[in-house]
Length: 269
Image (cartoon, rainbow, N blue to C red; front, side):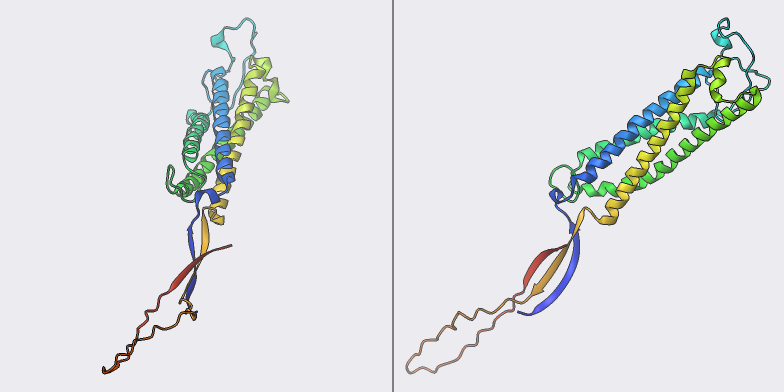
């Protein structure tokens, strides 16, 4: 038997050969993104409402002394309008709506991965579910940058707000803001928004790394070894005998054999 050709080829795996762990963890990370994004958006919106929709990030706030029990709702919090400088509304809008957009996109990707099989190729649903992996990787990387930017601006903006408060009002802690009719509940909402925003960013990071590993490992593909060779001759078969005819010239026929090749496929691990 003569070997004619030997080579390796990368082909799509059958769907049942692809581990469901890839799909399970991917959807789990998207669920975390949805939950943390909604919590961050709602908490930050509550804090903005208590500041009369003024942006407190990177603000320079000075309060007036006032009796919180006798003050009207319109007078609270008692900002000194002559000395107070609020942050940009566009900045607060970005930190407010980036997490909710994150939740919406993560929900859509979770639905897509749920509709698809575990990977490779399948006859049910999308025939090649691995094709959404590469667009998802690109989108995840882009939104990872957006989520990180939002988290950094939210945390640094809050820190700048607290620093200006302590300097202007001669206080030692940002929690002392309750003396100026800003409830501890409002301050806790900002903290919840920050924490949820970082969880959101971390989930995007893990989802991106998981997709990157899936592409690097070629989890949806396998290597096939293809061997092409000539068939083995069958020595057990005898050549057919031609009958002898008296008075006739005998002729010898030559039988031409066509060379047929055998192809063997093997999975190469």
